[in-house]
Length: 329
Image 1 (cartoon, one colour):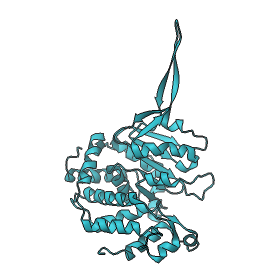
Image 2 (cartoon, rainbow, N blue to C red):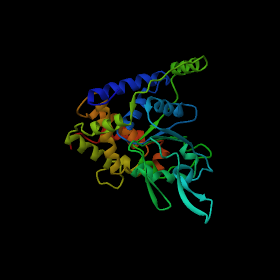
Image 3 (cartoon, rainbow, N blue to C red):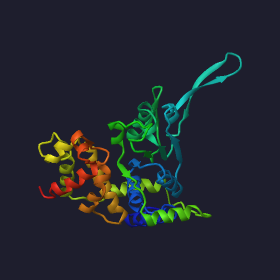
Image 4 (cartoon, rainbow, N blue to C red):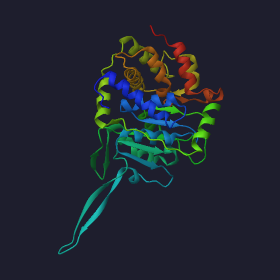
């Protein structure tokens, strides 16, 4: 279907969620947030232990979109050139042999890139995605190569406590619009997963959108209105995560070592607009902001020693901030 208005965007989102349900059992909130990230041209980090369907989730999304999809399995021996591409020497045989360099594009030149188990590769290779995610381009041997207009990185990450993992640097984490935490399924969902995956399956997925549809959706979402009051609330919420800010609550100063930067506020507002647009609404609400805040702040707050000792994580901090920061200053 074609996206031409907020109503058609709403119908497309419903259709995509319905198609996901053919393959993905549960995880409706994760699917919705993943689509919001896609529609706003963000990047998404999926966090969870192996076996929870993170890769299946991304593969299903790729099948529902008429887009170029590539997958990179990140391993300790992966090199930056395995991501971005490299220059090779072409030799012309004949009188006066000629040699010239030719750039061979890596898998990053795609619309949807699955960076599978991104934290299993060292920081040098992780950094190969920094320029691509921020500027939609890569530079190899001094030459800059543009990436497609629709470029969506979805990375999966195992919990950092597992052996053989490398923490993502703050600059890399900040490139991701959302960090979505995938938890174990409920008992009924697990029973359904076991039953459906141990019998003959013949699930057919229908492609729903193409590149031009996503570009239109991106423009429509940016036209969604949001009140100045809500923008002020988001700014105060983000600033309250910084322990050095005079307005930060006492529990933040005790628990947080580093807070979120301005990009967090931008992503909260964009995410709220996306959820509104996916419902066919022309204005974002406070509930939209509440719905996306944890996903935006989850990977941007560095918990300090005292916070870890008290078993406080980013989600706990975000929940407390919504109880502390007032909508009306």
